[in-house]
Length: 86
Image (cartoon, rainbow, N blue to C red; front, side, top):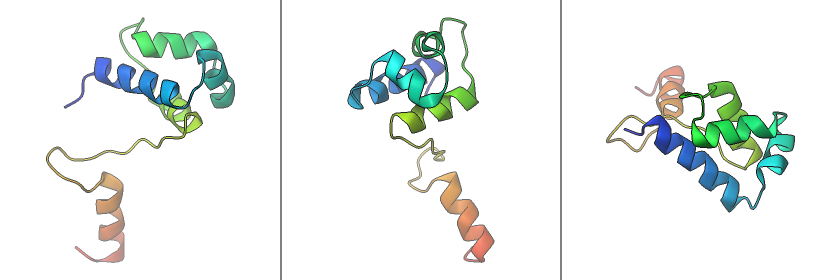
């Protein structure tokens, strides 16, 4: 299981891999640069999921939930249930 510190580091790595500054990522996501900095360092001890999703999307990533020890995402499982394949 990932801790919030792991998620903060993953966000920073996503930004760096996209070759974006904190300011550029913030502009793309429609948040302030201080929000990016706060989330990358966990300055307030937690983070907004809404802002996290926006920032990841702005860096070219999707947030996916995967059950520990499995390859399929929660989205995959829900789609299978909706289509009656389970």
